[in-house]
Length: 403
Ligand code: HEM
Image 1: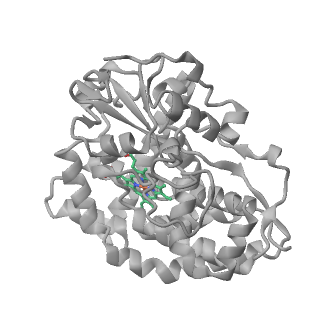
Image 2: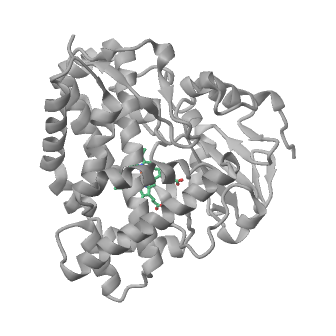
């Protein structure tokens, strides 16, 4: 068995050129060392076949009991872990309780509301020639949708916005954070708990037709959902529900402006919307990587991954693997059999995928119809990416809406 050590493949994730375009590095990684142990002892896995195999392999999980051995993410004392970071049976129990409240009917019912939100935001944006699409549209659509779905009042959205960004940045591994940032993250969680505790209390008294009332009722019905679990679940749904969808819309719009022939194809045939959304998710996925722990010693293609070691599944690399996708570096909105891993795979497959797909479909179709000649309003070199390592997205995206 071999343990690869190819230091030439190390990179600075905050290097401006890498953030602007991580795909050349990811390609080198996949081609030269597809199962690569970095100097921190983490295994970077970049081939599509290996990534999807690990998703389904029960020998990998979150292994909370093993986490003290690594520097990736230490459990926060006294806090329940969100089910996105739990293994069965806790994961199964919590996910199925949420599924009881977050039903496909609830998502279907949102369709006309999403269309109205998208149109309302575009009415305002189209009054100007150039807008920051992140602020005016990409962020606003999903945050308004998830707020409505959960039952977060519109007047509170601005005050929880900063908390949400801190929590989303907090998804990055602990070693990427300064002690000061760790304190800010802990405070954001505490503030979020406080916020949802108050809102849940109101919903218990006066239930409404929203997800918070549904989740509160699941707990009231005597199901095994503690108050701490309920609070972390609300934060998970709220943050996962918009921080990623925002980057689907932002990264996706940028990809369309860079590929005018594809944009034209979409404009001429909006019926391709469903496959267009899948392709935009594949091409520049909002979450670039995810972590699992080896729950026992595992041999993967000749490499020994020892119990407790961390594997990092590189979605951005897997989604561009030529073994899984024809001409993977080309954007092809009508791509068939698109087995991208932007929503993960296995038991943690994104719970909100149907909602994200619906939002993406309505947002892109309406944007392309109402602003058919959209184009980037700044030089490519001036594009700015947020500092997050896991979630990949732009700070702002100046777009000319009128050609
Ligand atoms: C384009 C938008 C979205 C993307 C790219 C995305 C991506 C993902 C990914 C990759 C995971 C698995 C993470 C891992 O295993 O490390 C995940 C899980 C999850 N997502 Fe999403 N997501 C999106 C939208 C949403 C929305 C709209 C919601 C909620 C309304 C949501 C809720 C969740 C939840 C609750 C989980 C945890 C599932 C579990 O652990 O069983 N996501 N998402």
